Image (cartoon, rainbow, N blue to C red; front, top):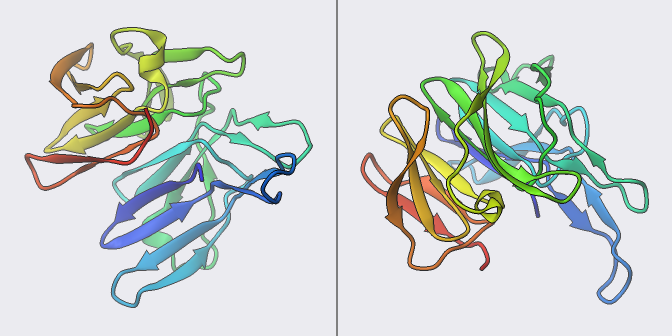
Amino acid sequence: QGLALVAHKGKLFRIGGFQARNAEGEDHDLWSAGGFARFDPQTKKWEDLPDMPAPRSSFDAVVVGDRVYVIGGWSMQGDKETQWRDDAYAFDLSQADDKAAKWQPIAKPPFKRRALCTGTRDGKVYVIGGMQPQGKVTTATAVYDPETDKWTAGPKLPGEDMEGFGAACCTIDGQLYVSTSSGKLLKLSPEGDKWRPAGKLETGRFFHQMLPLGKHQLGVIAGAH
């Protein structure tokens, strides 16, 4: 659970997540993972790639160009104190077959969050919402520019704080959309300064997935309410 899946040039990449090592009914024994693997639909096989520098779950990942960016989350290691991740990394997927390829750190995010979502528009990474270490949900958006390796503040999601918990986002035809727990479908304005209404889901959900289906349609799957 709590992993990230991204696609790049016909391959699927699985990153991180966590597993419960306790039997049903026993005290929780939860462990975040740092694994990184590639699935080839042609051969129907998984191939291990270099692990992340540290285990991570309840995070998100997004591809911009040939690079996948991993941001947010925490690291659970059994009965040890959970560590909220305050670092972020990128991996060049075009170099995945190079045995020397490694995860590279990017500028440290100005936040600690989990249960967030990441999207992209105009070559930038958008980090939307999430839970903070003190237990408060935020509707804030942070924007990372790979060209400058810098973070800036983006527009907040409209509505109550819970709108930022376990949201989902995707890019369709160059436009960034986000689906929130109340069922709102929002679209980033052309100026990038506000989220505008774009529709409404019949049933709100969080911890779901939203994916583009062609240039003019998106799909929403799974989650909870």
